[in-house]
Length: 382
Image 1 (cartoon, rainbow, N blue to C red):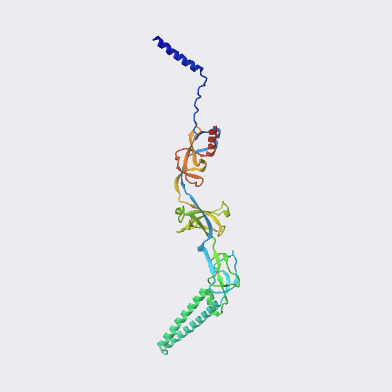
Image 2 (cartoon, rainbow, N blue to C red; image 1 turned 90 degrees about the vertical axis):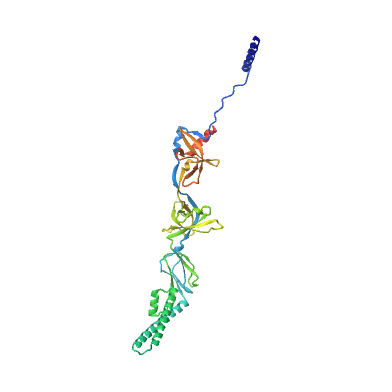
């Protein structure tokens, strides 16, 4: 019994002696690991950030399409000659403003002269057959002329009138108006030439004619356009063409006029076919142009405003990006903030739609997230 106690005590003494003689220092306490997404902001820096909440707004995306300014074809008139002839006079040049009925040029033509002669012959024959028919009715009333002769003269009158109307229509097709027809029938003076006139008011945007040139009805001589309203034609990629509809509002920006000037319009046409070379669908909008700043063939950008939808958004200033991921900072109180990842939609009007990551009830840094993230990175390096 005593021997056992002594041995045990000796073992304890040896153990204590060995511990006392050890030269290794005790292990240091483990350092607490800091969350790299957390940051406690210094009080003097709180003025650099603004805390708010995500908001629910009606968001309308803007689809962009390259476009160009074109003449409104409903306000465009192509003018040619009604007869084959030679141009004797020109009254306008490119850029001139004209009104409907203004003379643009003068043309002389043998066809015009022959048509006038035919008109005069038909007019004279009509007068003669009218008088012959009147005498026949008088003689028939006196029982002097047989009925068959009266009917023959009436038939001749009807044919003469038909020929006269045909000759009159022919001159009208050649550009002779009613007042000129009356003068021709009254005085019998053959017109050596006739004016080519504007059919509507507008600007001369094309003139393909010179004095002395022989022209035909198939030749285009002038183009007159009313530029107070123009078309803007855009090419929408096929991937987003399904979202474009007639009646949608558009904004037009023309680089040549500066960023501060924009024009509003409505889509009036969406093509039913696809351009196989560019893989785009043509859309057309009409834009008012009273000051004529928009000029045909100008390049433009068409911004098509999509139908608005309700969406939770955060401002652009609330988002920081790192390693191809987007983050916002949640406010946790006492100047503490936590960086959390979020999924965002495409930017619209300096806002990002939130697809996943935060809710409308949470408080976030809505402005100054960039400065807060810099502080977080500095703290991580310390």
